Length: 87
Image (tube, rainbow, N blue to C red; front, side):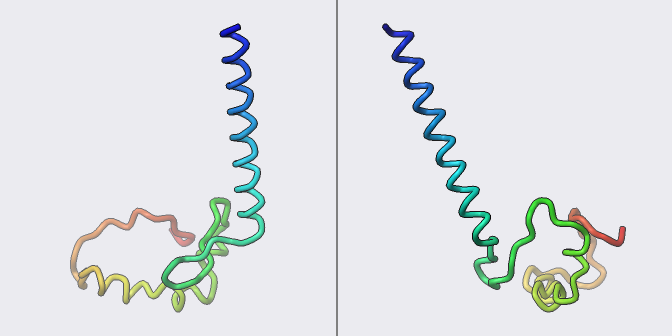
């Protein structure tokens, strides 16, 4: 009896997890994620190099402004650990 109860609970948990994942996939397919502050579309995990080289990237991401806001100045040593299409 205990084994049957555990099996039933495991099955119910598996079904619930499957439904939640399925709903998440449907939501993700309907609307690409947006950055909460800028509103620009966030790159997906399978994005190719064209996303990094898009003409609007500089305007959308404002990298010079970002460096200014976090206090990075010319001559400072930092680590750039992100992907790049030109490296």
